[in-house]
Length: 261
Image (cartoon, rainbow, N blue to C red; front, side, top):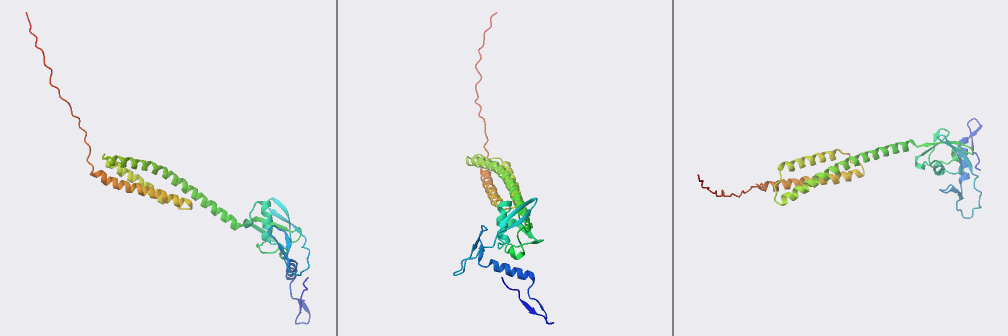
């Protein structure tokens, strides 16, 4: 155990050079020397050539309050608060990164040692979800909600574009056969497609919805370009006038009957 150093004061007396807390920290550090805590919580002796084996420090049981639940956890006094969080994860279901451990009214960092902070057997700690973690989860939920909303909107537009694309194909086949199509059909399709293009632009691009939106936008653009070409080709076609040729027949010969008195 490290001795407590003293220094002489100006009036000839002596005062402690270290505070009691500093002395406790120093003693705890000396107890930790030569020992390490594995991720599983097991305390093992560090390899030191020629060093005599030392018994590990006895485990302590800390009482952790989490909401309405109480947990009594065995842990090495030379463990860190981060290692204690790993032990609590299996009991509480709360991941270490989402935990906030408070001891004596102060949130403790992952690298702080239990013994250095004064944690002893039967010490009481409070576990809560880290506020930063709560904010991250809230932001993640908001982001996922936006993605789902965007995907639904894009899916609805995709169904409408499918129907319009079928009409474009039908008009293309008709014109390729030399049949003139009413120009209003082409202009109406172009107008409907452009409306869907505007709707797609208004959908916020978040995550995977961004790529889906781009795919549908390219489909709309391709259909409009096809209709522009068809509009020119259609204008060159002559309207087909269907006439009916009627066959004429001569009037049938009539028979004159002679009358006798």
